[in-house]
Length: 410
Ligand SMILES: *Cc1c(COP(=O)(O)O)cnc(C)c1O
Image (cartoon, rainbow, N blue to C red; front, side):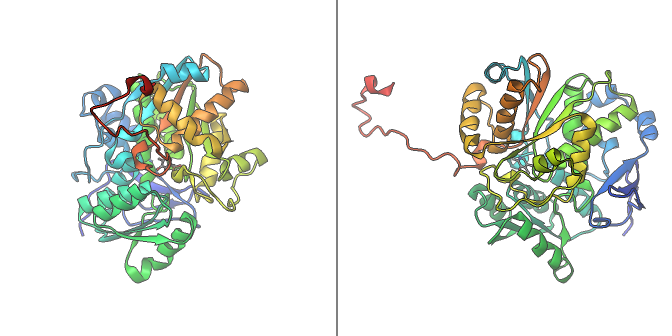
């Protein structure tokens, strides 16, 4: 197959030891660890500037020179809109943060930011002529993969824990994926995919096991910078599972700095947040380790954070430390109430994963690790409507619509 040049990509680079790998063939891991996509940033800078980008349609593809989009090829897309960066004054007041913002990823296709990564990964899979993809998932990645694969005419196999939120199961089935419920966690689904790749002819779309999902997730950082007029905030709170988004944003900021597009030197402190029911990253951070030990008996209602072991653990921990940030665990038992009250405060469709960041913000303000007047961005990575089982409802009924007792309505 004739392959177009990937616009400004120069090569791939192994994150663990810097080995250069060619980008014109399919690549996965190097020494079982992820790859970075590297660009000729000088050429990017000569070709486009921030003003030109501002004039393009408001989708993640406006940053195409900083994405591995093959020249002349269209992306596999549903029109991934630039997501709103919303001021959150009422939640901010409750948390003691005067300048709080929520980057609301719940409005993306399939209701989570997984759309960013999988739009990119499937665009590249299609470019390489891949016909069958497979993914282990905690939920939303499967839903996004199923949708983008359908859009691209690629066959999709999805392996998820059997207690994955039912909406995730449904969206995969609806999009025509072959879906299997696995007695175990995402770390049990991973080997099923890995061992099956050869026999089944699958391409493995696991988090960070192909190089392009990071590039899609990187657009969160590009958008954030542009929305704040190319000045980065003081603090970013990020609900961390496999860590693609945190790693991707940190990469985005480095590329923007190299391009000279940032108007201030300020680096945000990256704060990775997990539930204390599955907190391998905070544990490794506290211990000063570069690699995280797998978490035993992982459990959390924030299903996207139920990742006991992450192949990019060192990339997450490196980014946090370089940024002067930290990793925190918050109580599992408080997530749903924090989610409910944050949604009630702002009306934004906040998912359980992002609710961990609300708890983290409260804790860090109380500890003096976030100052009241700092600019803080909290990532809302998905829509609450995907988690129907997390909020048991017991609503009062009106049995006779013609005889309403208004005094009892409260
Ligand atoms: C996957 C997921 C996360 C974790 O994202 P990573 O970038 O893999 O750390 C957080 N929130 C939601 C809703 C998710 O689906």
